[in-house]
Length: 121
Image (cartoon, rainbow, N blue to C red; front, side, top):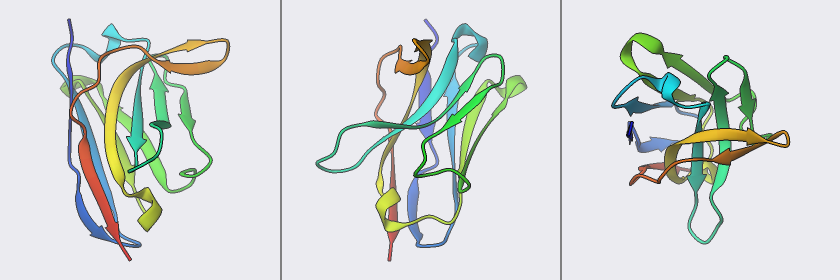
């Protein structure tokens, strides 16, 4: 089974940037797609961006124009470039396999430990 491991989180000031990495232990085409989720304290986990194996992408409204999902097939890695960060982006960020059912993205794998992103005001 291909595993996914997140990295790249940290502390950044508002307006700054970070790039998160999701490294797969095998080919990323083992999955229908890969998504980036986040969970802030006291809130439900939410999908912020996803990329299907065919290359189509999804962004939550809250991150459109600020976050970019991309992939490096040779490195079996999916990235989340985050720019113009806001304090409300503070959360633990996770990557997970995703599938699409009824037009909606659903998580399709097990959750890792995630990577903490903290945005100071």
